[in-house]
Image 1 (cartoon, rainbow, N blue to C red):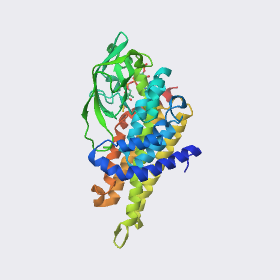
Image 2: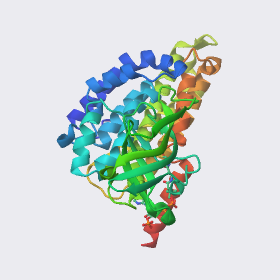
Image 3: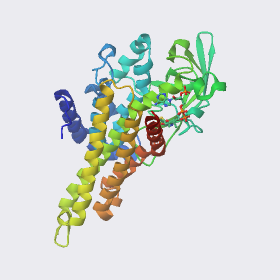
Image 4: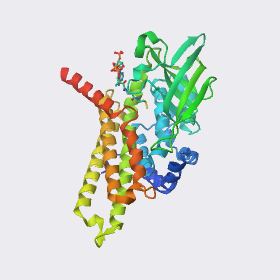
Length: 383
Ligand code: COS
């Protein structure tokens, strides 16, 4: 199914598919095992203009949107969900600037992100503010023409490798989440340091670290939007990026299905290839159907967002819930089809399963997504 993609979008998908197969897949196991950051892949993605896709023409980009970002995230994740995050995590860090930055801030920060010279990261989560994102404690105090930040963010994607962080911090703690503000903080700002690097179950090619602010000084004009508007910046950013997590889940699921079909054709038991058994065929048919349903939801939502819809929190949350649950189910079934070999690191199935799990957790757990969906339903019904 082509989902009414434009010619350019179809070409982009073909290019990303080719790069994933020829360049990303061969190094996926290496980065998974070592947990090193794939700088060679970042360089390649920059040369291919992947970091330009989600930034507008006036700021060094190619004017694409959530559709383009989802297409490349899906295709790259088919080979490695962790390596794909170098681009998707940067988009997450850049969206607050794209959506809320002043013209001056966009001119200053976006072109280098578009060039792939600067990676970005989004700093919302803290040790005691995960699902309860409004409970952040990091402070930002205005002193003359500067803000001074103090606090600790953790589980930050691209932490330690990004040059630009967008950070949610309290400017008025008495007001709780209504006293939160968003800032751009360059990695070399005095007082910013990188703490513990996480040793993760999956997406091991993606860097995840603490980002610590100790009397960290930034110019006052690095405030994004207005003081007190930070929680809305975070929520509106996540509304736009959750289809991208769904696309990552979709790519992981598709990669696992591709591997399972190839293996089932090759593997012989009882004198025939196991794909000839209906028990296996039924599993593969369900996997393929669920993947296609997830794809239809993601592409439709991406199109809805890119065509200027203002209200898509519910659909974004649906994409993330559905695709990540599909990814978990499909990758678990892929391991099953591989049998004992599926459990071994010599074959790709177990990595897909480990990589899939995070998509049910980050950028808002699936329990939170279901709350978002239900709240919107309740409001729609009340109208
Ligand atoms: N767009 C714009 N504004 C939004 C919004 C959205 N999608 N969602 C909430 N808001 C606004 C509300 O309108 C409300 O505004 P007022 O204070 O003016 O009334 C404010 O934000 C607080 O909203 P709410 O009361 O619903 O917030 P809660 O503290 O109950 O939390 C959830 C809402 C749980 C949905 C939110 O905390 C969340 O998304 N948590 C998960 C966070 C997450 O994804 N973490 C992953 C880390 S980032 S990788």
